[in-house]
Image (cartoon, rainbow, N blue to C red; front, top):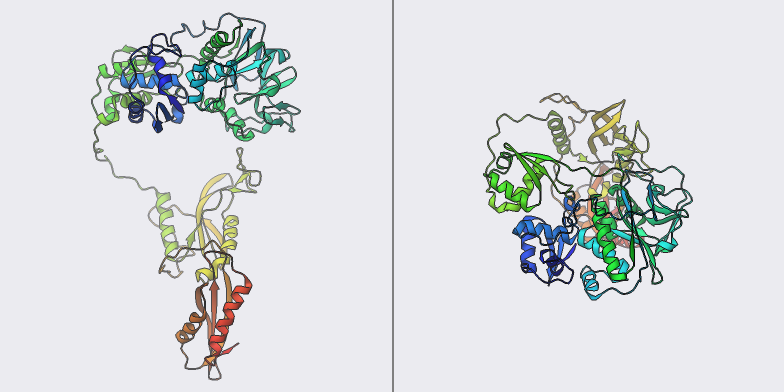
Length: 619
């Protein structure tokens, strides 16, 4: 995410106004980049006053915003924030005043939409944005549109809450938040979504499986008007003729937003934040900030808010024993240090004996267990202050995993005997266990055997037998199958004798005798890179005088072989009537192209001419 140093400065300036330049100047952009790198996030680049911060997924809850990064800098450098929009507005729910029944919102599934706030503002005058707002958005790579939309985008980049503005006069009746269903049509700015599937939504909260008809939409009486958390519709878009707006600040299930964004191929700054999961409490702060800014920039009157919040977020509490950080980090961490870190991070805490009962801020959804708090302590004090120490000796003899040991022994034996190991898909087109979250519609089951997959692999690899100079292709796989209500590990072999499968015995250090133990050991002589292009095979058999050695014949053929020759193997030899018959297999291949029959026929003519010149007869 792009972060502007000038924008960050407003959080450390008196009043916190967008144009305010007061307060102690922050360190340079490079110094800020260094501080974040060693304590929080990787910095992709630092150009001028713009940092490109790579926010890790576990911090997408709170740090995909300037306020989030400013809070990190405050804690790392121990510089208090002068202006914090998430702390300066009083109690969490009192900022949603005044209430109004001019607009209403109904949530059909409270697990997919945790909160929906609609703010009604009338009498606005849509027009250009002031210079400071245009500059702020340009720093983020955003083009200014108008003062209403720009205000909503500014708040999103400022505190992390996505917002959307509708033309209120274009909305018919109350707003509802539901999943798309058969017959729905949504006209987005550049495309139209039509739902032709069935009526039943396919959302499964346990496995995050969603059919097209299950995407979440914002609707009025006429149908969908926005793809929830992703994109607004063109039929209710704010234009220069808009005089009243309905402003949306909501909180949606991150899984459904992620799926819909990927499915429809629409990824936005809004969807990115919902995918990372943000606190439903943030919606109120975003709504209040955006509504106030719109009234300031576009005029009008804030009539009030309709807030559907059926299951408010409850404060979380994490208990940390004072001795835990020292034990985990391997360095003495005093209570004073713990207090200091928690205060810098704005973590409310209460000490009860040797325990800290911590209440993280509502936006810090990543703080759930004591180890999360220990990680915060470590990174704020600095990882470089934690010395490297050797691990203590392991107190007992390591136990051997018999399953793994047996599989390794079998694997080594088979490879020594010329077999190649393959891994085939665990999914199959038939079986006992169907997969709920199937990869595709072709193979919806877990495999009940290895033979099907290995037979297919053998069929594909046999085509390269001549190229590899092998008399036969020998494959094996050790893998899990699901049959007869069990999950078992089996061994499967594939060679000239066919494809056969047997249970892999897990009998301690001894391994039962297998079908493969009498096979000869093969030795790999050298490695050579392979071509992506197919090979062509030709055979030649010829009569030579009885005393002619095979090496002499092979050398004559090899010299006439040409640039595309890759293998020459003797595969047959016999004597008759004072003559010897040698049969050779010639393999041609290019590293640059697919060879044609005409090219290979020309090469073979040179071979024929060479052997005939020696007085030998081609059979």
